[in-house]
Image (cartoon, rainbow, N blue to C red; front, side):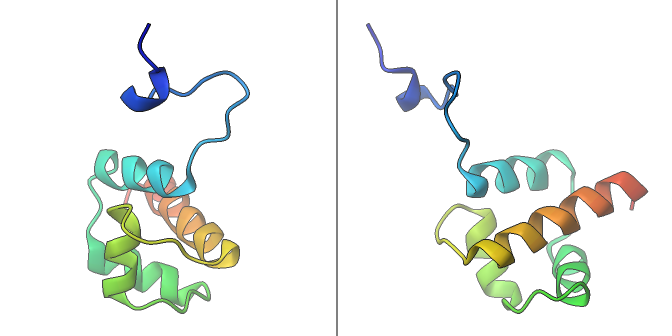
Length: 82
């Protein structure tokens, strides 16, 4: 039997990887990196645009506060329809 984690299928009770969640929302939201970074920075984010890009491509981790700010920025931008 295949291991569903290899396929990226979340198991019940499994906590999703915040980087994967952000990457998926970023791709599906058709967001502009510079626009997202500007919004994120405006609400208190302190990572530069290159670090944000790496995070959204699941290449690095950030402190919890910065991850929360990125997720907030994505949610607010997509909720506004911007």
